[in-house]
Image 1 (spheres, rainbow, N blue to C red):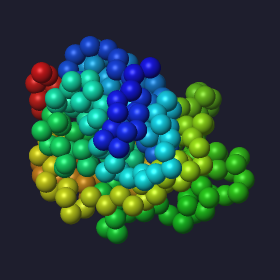
Image 2 (cartoon, one colour; image 1 turned 90 degrees about the vertical axis):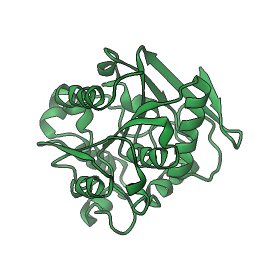
Image 3 (cartoon, rainbow, N blue to C red; image 1 turned 135 degrees about the horizontal axis):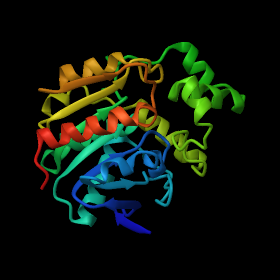
Length: 263
């Protein structure tokens, strides 16, 4: 197991695979690197993928705090530094997309190109999930919470054919303090004012049926990020990248290859 050490002394586990130009993959809230297990191999025809376990998850240290999307971005830079990667393509989904926004704003020289999936700018201008979804996710009944989360992530037809286990439902070993820290980090994210500073060529991806992170956020991001492209995935929910991988993974690689030559 390999670890990078952050400026505040936290060990961040990371997992490089494949060969080629580096592609940093950033997972969703309260998840570790296994979020990408189903699809990361799709990129190994042309890219070396780099995943990490956010602080609080997986094999990384689990401090009491603080947790923030800005801090997660700095942890990602520590991983790139430890690997000697000067520039990487960056693909972040859900909270990972929020982390990727800060990475591109604060460290523009490290981001060759940017893909933001099923994410939002955060803050008061973002579109929030509706009250019914929020109440179901906060249910005291664990079975109801699981049913709700599965329904938000995948279509019923796909779940019938793919009963699991599903790697996008949260790190099962996440301690309560870290779970709460991740929730606060995602909820407090607000990059609205700085999004116009993003210089990297950017592709925004979103499922048309995403109720977990409403699809309307894709247009907001594209309006704020200069030159950003938008691609909506018809019929897809929050885990569009997994259920619709046959469409999405080639689309991402095509964007990366067309926009920026590998180095």
